[in-house]
Length: 229
Image 1 (cartoon, rainbow, N blue to C red):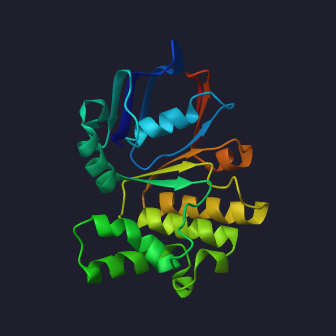
Image 2 (tube, rainbow, N blue to C red; image 1 turned 45 degrees about the vertical axis):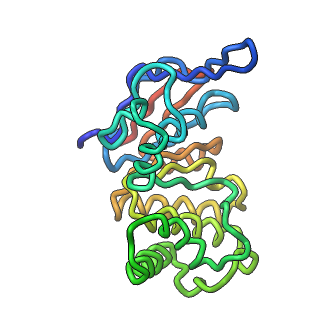
């Protein structure tokens, strides 16, 4: 399979006052199209920094971050915003749904930035909500949904633009065990049936076990790369 992600000596240094903080240290990594990767490591190991680089929310201090054929470190902030809209979607621990909007409206909101007609937006939203099993709840607001349902709405919002890459940061962190398993089963379905490339940051070994590949970071270094059969 071709690679969707290529990191070559990717390094990230943040400047805080007179101090330089090294959060990612010359990471070289290749991820194939359609892979499902769990990114693990202790707090402060560089997991979220790596996820932000892969999603074009940040750029490397040194090295190359090539995602979907583009060298993200060479793009302007405006170009990165356009690239993100076309290629990548994020799933967060805290759902980030707007409480005054229905599930339908929350999923539709990012689509208003794309050149889609109202009819096309409806088709995208209804398809995404159907995939996550919540089409019958599209007119409910977040406070009328369970935590697991809220996360599924957030996943539908991520899916609505049909991204090539899904980046999830602790997507089960605020859920009970049953809801967490439902979310992981859904991510597996998105990977196996819909071919989405998925990278999940997690502290939970059960979540990591679901993935096909486990990457372990420590102090900004890639320490272990476990490929499963």
